[in-house]
Image 1 (cartoon, rainbow, N blue to C red):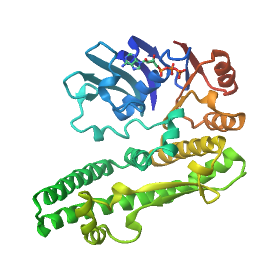
Image 2 (image 1 turned 60 degrees about the vertical axis):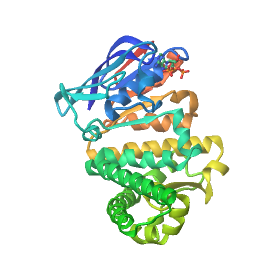
Image 3 (image 1 turned 180 degrees about the vertical axis):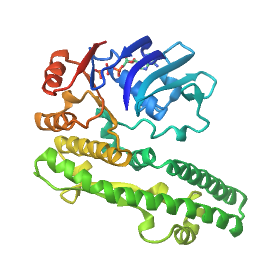
Length: 359
Ligand SMILES: Nc1ncnc2c1ncn2[C@@H]1O[C@H](COP(=O)(O)OP(=O)(O)OP(=O)(O)O)[C@@H](O)[C@H]1O
């Protein structure tokens, strides 16, 4: 999977810009605020149909403009593939593969395996459980087509059940039959999602620990636990048990929408007890494990985006990443950095071809 070319129209701070990439290493360099991260985000858009950094789709259109277009030319399995993501104000986003628009974006996810490592990953530690669930969901859905639709179906039923709980409260009424229809549906989708998250984490956690110990040279032990109500019991029973609470709260208080990951260092939460360096190592290990996992599942090394990475990492961690990309089997790498010389010095050590783009 190689991204050969990228052209941007009205994407964030880019009015019109085109790039021809090296098949191995590409570096965006330039001053703060010049658009290095935006260029990486445009590539992320081609894989996921959305921004990694800004969830408000319209805010990715250049200020004062009416639309954006991100156009990427790839080679996959020796075939040319053209992916175009575009958004016009007042219209729905469109993702096209070779000129044909996807009816469901979920069908595109996984077509371009990609992993991003960015300072913004700190949200995985500092923010709420939804960020960690999204991480898990995005990794699983890259290799499991059905997973995203199960998730969408679950969320739809969940919204309906919550609306019904509100309706009951407002109208001071209750109907057990309608609730139990929703309970059955939530149970079906929720149980599937739980099993897939569990299976994924069973494979992922050992890879993650291996990555962490390589980065930290076995200095400390880390752990990652999957927290879910469904470890205790099946979702149907949990929903039945919690009905009085749910009626009082007017929303569904148990289910896979409450799942979380516990990030631990020596049995303590890393958010509270990890040093900044340990937290960074933890995040890099998570992302490198994601890289390994996707490569294992898809058979191809994902495209790797390293945002501002050399600014944030000590030599050990840089060396760890370098050793990974120096491997014959590494895919294509995109780096952003403020210092052209530093970037060039680092990429020179990797015995692969590279291109540097001064923005
Ligand atoms: N919708 C938009 N329209 C115009 N400009 C935008 C839009 N969204 C973001 N920008 C601009 O993009 C710039 C930030 O770009 P980016 O984050 O890619 O910078 P960077 O080169 O990675 O900088 P740093 O080195 O500080 O990380 C800012 O100047 C911001 O105002």
